Image 1 (cartoon, rainbow, N blue to C red):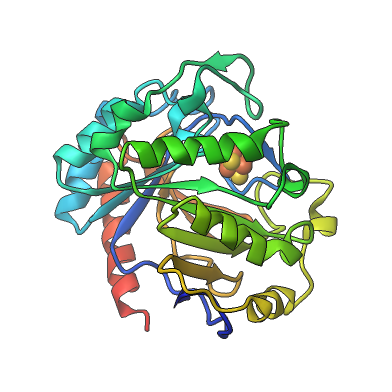
Image 2 (spheres, rainbow, N blue to C red; image 1 turned 90 degrees about the horizontal axis):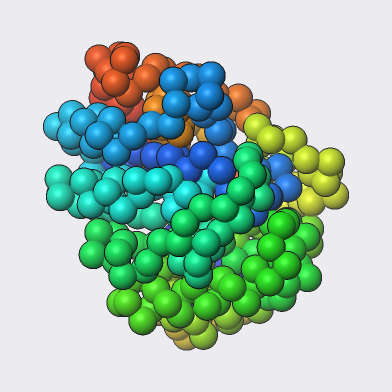
Length: 305
Ligand code: SF4
């Protein structure tokens, strides 16, 4: 559901983006650990290694002929992929709209791997990616480190870092939005988070209801899960705003099946409910099957009301 000037408005079922999009979840690990992380990591050691820039570009070229309009580059953290700049460059060069979903830690310098690995990854300069991205989404799950840290663990100064990262994006004229995962720790702060997003110059604020059925189970999931109707009630309590920031509230209803994804081992998959996934095949080794599935996905997308 998209609401301009978030205010008193009902929460309608989520409708997928009508711009045919593939989510390339190429980041093999992450600078934070979220309670109940929703990402299906590709387990690259077992499945042929990390997908390469050449592989994603070769596949995307064929997918574009079959309708692909937007590449969303996500993770784990996509800035942790060693060829991230080259991947963004290749997508842009083929005329795709390019979105980047990242925590953004690598923009600040070398980043420690907190989830799905150990060690550090090199810094990525905002100036190096700025020419190739149309939009960057950055998580902001609270109006202070305390609430943000209840859900996104492993970086004790993430709240301040996040605002620094978006100020760097703004300085490079990169459009950005904040994403909030609404859960019991921050549900009473939505208005305060929106105020921060407006102050920081975000173009968009997306609020997703916490999904406890992610593929990476968390002991905290019951404590973070909202009661039925709590998300919708909280949205109704947010007073109207005069800003032009685009606001989307996305509840759990009808989200399953809306996405077509590639994991960091190069396997294409679709959600099949309750944190499960259906793997279509590898984007190079099983390319014909994956392109067939993508074509069916595009047709289904356009048939949805
Ligand atoms: S949900 Fe959190 S831990 Fe999982 S990939 Fe995203 S930022 Fe990383």
